[in-house]
Image (cartoon, rainbow over all chains, first blue to last red; front, side, top):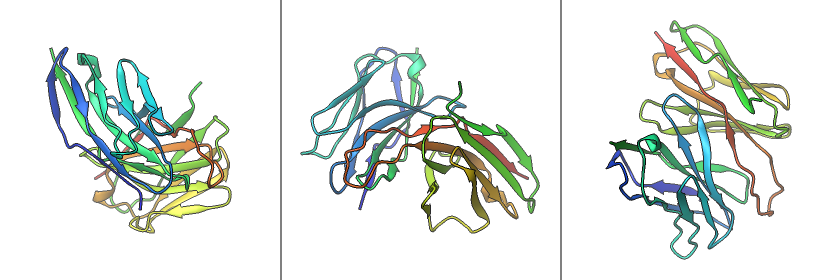
Length: 111
Length: 118
């Protein structure tokens, strides 16, 4: 079956620290992979996506590379800011057009 | 130009009442969804629906029912509200691709409706 596993939070970092949030998936076929971000009091917004192996999605300084060999899509940012404090969700869209979300990782960045 | 909108944003009601949450999308998408997010931010799919197929998460009580008057709307009706129904409910939409095609379409979310059952 299809599923997404992401690292549990909460994660607390100092401003300008390096961020990694791990995400691994299980899927049949060739899914598309996504990272969504949810800022406090808001809905989920697409952060970045990748549709095939070795693709790199990037946005707002965040990056994630679709690694088929390790079935991973880890989110990284070189230097986090206080404004990056949010909950981050890894997700996949299966070839059967179903979406599967991870449990979310809460990130707090302190000045 | 709101892509996916929900009303109301906040809903406070008594146990046992029946309530509805409305959702509208202006993206021309043909698939819509309802999610429930609990206090720990865990996101649970409740329904996905297009004009041909309703997929229900089997763990959703039958007190919850989606109603779609047209492709742009998917409303959520909840009967006999219980304390455990308190959560934030998100509507979302996406464009459907045929099985076997490599889809790149994203799911777009509404701002959420915070339901509090007293």
